[in-house]
Every structure is written in structure tokens, then in C-alpha cells.
Amino acid sequence: MRFETVELSPRIGTEIRAGKTDLLKGGLREEIRDLLEQRGILLFRGLGLTEEEQLEFSSTIGEVFDQGEKGIFRVTLDRSITPQADYLEATTFWHIDGAHDRVPTRASVLTARVLTDDGGRWTEFANTYAAYEDLPLEKKQWAETQRVVHSQVYLQSAHYKSPTPEMAAHWRTHSEQIHPLVWKHRSGRKSLLLGHTAGRILGMSDDDSRRALGELLEWASQPRFVYRHHWTVGDMIIWDNTGVMHRVEPYRADSGRLLSRTTLVGEEPVM
Ligand SMILES: [Fe+2]
Image 1 (tube, rainbow, N blue to C red):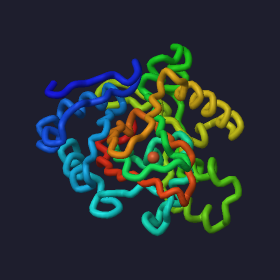
Image 2: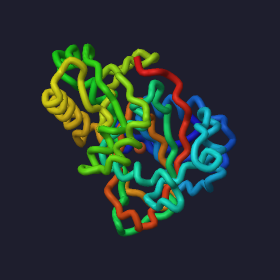
Image 3: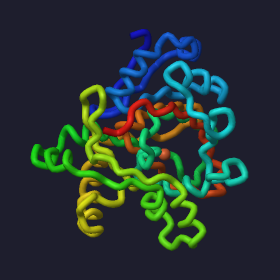
Image 4: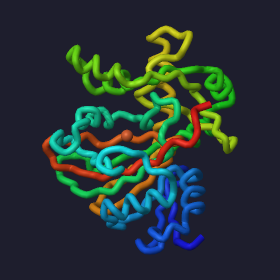
């Protein structure tokens, strides 16, 4: 290991202390990827990479997803900067990015650029590997046989209680996916595939589905599985999007809050 590490909590999160130059050289790919899978999120406190450097660093650990401007997606509620800003309102609810796709993205890298006093000061991350591992045996066996419908519609409906027909129609243009509740990764490890994109368990009534998914979500977001990061400008976080849910503290659309996100292309379908 060519950098110093500090555990942020027993079950999730490690801070990496490494210099900009070492990170950009790219020789740390395997160490960072291994640590990411084991620890769910990696924090680089006050690293202060520019967007170009963030892009460069991201491409040393995986294939960068083509989004936003040359791979940089600006996380803000300001529609003049990010046309998809409306969709981000619902990210105050637990979710895994692209859980309604066949192959969810591998990981995302986020750097805080502008913070304000109008909310959005923290982001929470929940380790869904740990949440699965700690389930009682009976519950694990039950979960392993369940299949769940994931959709952007469920996530957006958590935020927008009375959407216009146009909004609802737009949400439905996104893919819907049926995934197993327990993701059996190639590594042999298992995680829960949960969050507000999960709306229905196959073969169960809507009410029973909601109850069962709600209970599991509550289980998986217990403090012992969660790391809450209080942002400072320049902080960078990578999260393993295949085994971590996240959500942000609500913030005002006109707050000016801005983070830059780069995303790594998914590497394995949910099985
Ligand atoms: Fe997200």
C-alpha cells in the first residue's frame, strides 16, 4: 500500500491520504479498486482536483461513462447548468444509481465545488454488502429467492407526490428492470439491491411489497451500515455503486450547491 488509510467507521468508509501527483500517475489502480470493494466508499479529504484532473484520475481506475460535458456531470438543481436537474430532487431518497438498468454503473467519483448554508451539506452512504451479511439466516434465505421491479418511476414518486401527466410520462421513458433482491457478485460476495427505485416484489401484492421493501430499507440504513459525510469544498469521494446506496441532505434548488461527478461504466450485470 503506497498511501495511508484511516477507517471512517467499522463497516463502511476509508479515508485515503495520498498526494495529487501519486493519484494521477495511475499506479494505484488495483489497490484503490480492492479497497473500494471492501470498504464501499473512499474519501480523499480536501484533495481539490480540478474537473480535468478528476476525469484523469477516474480513467486510471475504470472506464469513464460518457455523460454531461466530456464525462463530467454537474450535480446541481440549477437547470441552466444541468438540464436533468429535476431528476436530482429525488436523490434525497436512498438509491443505487441506475438500479433500473441491466448493468448498474460500477462507481462514481464526486468532488464538492460549491457548498452553501441551504442544505446539501452531507451525503450518506449505506453498505448493502454489510446489510446482507448481518441479516438473520432465515431472512437471507427468503431474500435470495425474491425478485424486484426497479424503476425511475418509483424513485421519482417518492419525491413528487402529485406529478403532472408530462412528468410521469417522462419518467416512464426510462428502462424498468427486474433484479434479484440479493446480488450475487462475481467475487462471490452478496449484497442487497435496494433503494427507492425498488417498487414491487414479484408475486406479492403492492401493499405487502411496500411493507417488505420498507422494512429491508430500514434495516439496511441503520447507523452501523452508514457513513455520513459532511462536505468541505475540495473533498472527493468514490463510492462502489454496486454495493452502496446513497442519499443527500435536501437542499434548495436556488442554493448554488454544485458537485462534479464522474462515473465508471458498469462491469457486471446483476445476477
Ligand atoms: Fe445518485
